[in-house]
Length: 282
Image (cartoon, rainbow, N blue to C red):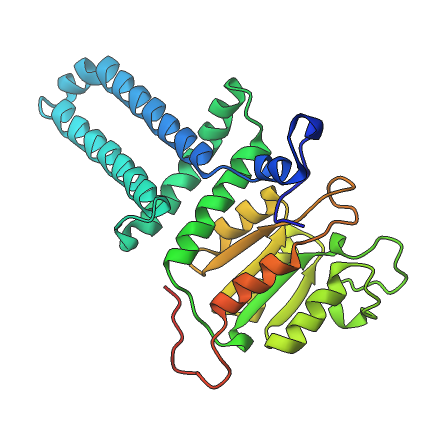
């Protein structure tokens, strides 16, 4: 299994399953491209508004058009610098890490416009959200987050549990009997092995509440594109990395997760048990 969503319906068009899986992975360039396009459209709208209103502004104060024009140019300049900085980070080139918070603010502001523009080109919202998660994970990796196991929270949706299981975990994964029928038991075993805190949420709102109550130093979340994107944005600046669930039966029903991918990410974050002084959260 791989950390993807549903596989393409036209899987027969690919030479093998690996190619189909690669096609299903979110493309980082998609989100960056739409963000750049949204910034360009927004800049054009600002310019048109300034151009139309400058005569009226001049009647109020002769310097007002120039002042507002300068402010607009500064805002646009900062926006494009943030996007350039994002591209450098994704391409693993030297970038300004302190500019990350401004980039997230820009993303929050321009995301609705990015989605709307994507629809014009036949790009679904889920694809845009998945691409954002891929970009955000790159930024997470570049921060070289290292925390003690007990300060790391792993949170997953309840749909990872087999729907027919009589032992409902709700908010307490300890109800799991570890029968091997779903990934909940696998995550419980991994939690025992590595020492991180593991919680299951029944929805995005509850997941954010759990994060707030647990007060971790880093989060690994398993969810669909929509929930991962909203969650990562909502908990920022708390470092959060997302792993897309696998949906062989459609959304929110008997979903799965690539345990190898989860283990790999966790081992890159969690400090050795005898190292309590090397914590780094970006």
